[in-house]
Amino acid sequence: MPEMRELATNGRRPIPPFTDEHETFRVEVRSFVEQELFPRAAEWEQARSFPNEVFGQLAERGYLGLKFPTEYGGRDDLVADAVFAEELARCGSGGLAAGTGAHTGIALPPIWKFGTDEQKRSYLVPGIRGERIGALAITEPGAGSDVASIRTTATRVDGGYLVSGSKAFITGGVRAHFLVTAVRTSHEGHRGLSLLIVERGPGVSSQPLEKLGWHASDTALISFDEVFVPEEHRLGEEGAGFYLIMANFAWERLIMALGAIGAMQVAFERTLAFVTASRATGERQAVRHQLAEIATTIEAGRSVTYSALRTYLAGEDAVREVTIAKLATQRAAFEVMDACVQIQGPAGYMVESGIERAARDARLGPIGGGTDEIMREILGRALGL
Image (cartoon, rainbow, N blue to C red; front, side, top):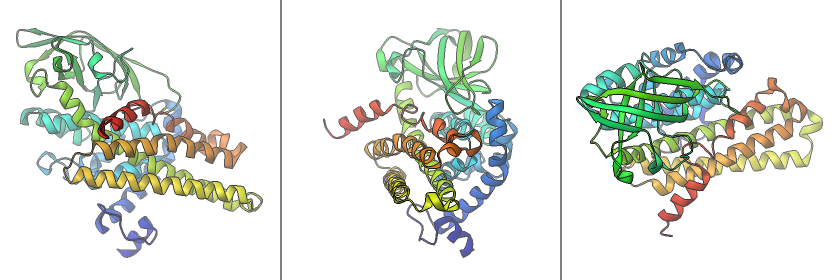
């Protein structure tokens, strides 16, 4: 279907690692997002949540399992998952994109990579079907980005652990049926951390938090009060939690970069359409220059992100490339959204424009998944400094 490929790529050849098939898939995803999700974005933003049925809709099309093995109901195509992450930005709600991404891109991967077959059957399979929703619970009040500061404890008891403590800023933490939770099983710093799958139940409570943006996603303060977790719900070996957490960061940061590219692209397209419809604005040289700068920023971000994706897919150490991609796209996305608001003037400042929401949603980029400051520190070390 050449006409579909042209629609997705603007007539250009696919950029590796994307193929013609992936670009055809891009058109499919874009059509679904714009026709099925975008029209309800404002409603879900106002409701401060989106219904669980959305997970079912995504599962029906196979979108929740794109990167996971076929034996568990997935498609085994990481590149297709990258397409989905980029195109989901067109839904008009950073909260919706974050809410689905927290499940498929952050909570399920540790189970896929480090879980037993029984754990995969119990959590990954129904997760791919959209029947059970997961969240990753790592961050704690006052701990910030320092994973080594985790204080939630898991005390050994007969048959498992008793978990006590709290987690903060957990995306999907209100609706989640299970929580992939970082706990301290000993006092040995990084080596004292483990990952447990904690089921929703007695002793687990969630409190929704209000935010600047991402209104359609639920973000929670979670408390654990001597919650019993069976030993068979531990992911990997006891004490290996830090390494399991670090292993998941690369893909999380990549999908954040891809999402930022998608969000910037759609903001640019809609701002360009606004300018084109207003001859008085469109004829101003300054506005033309602003749009040229935005287009350059998007292409630069796309280039480094696709490069990082290629390195990651090749199985190489991609820490340096992924860190650069996140640094190059997150602050840039917020600045692009701000510029689009400015170009549209009073109209852009209104809720109806959608651009003001995009600006609020983009502000989390330099914070989530590792702050810009942490990213610079990681990159500096990767450079041998």
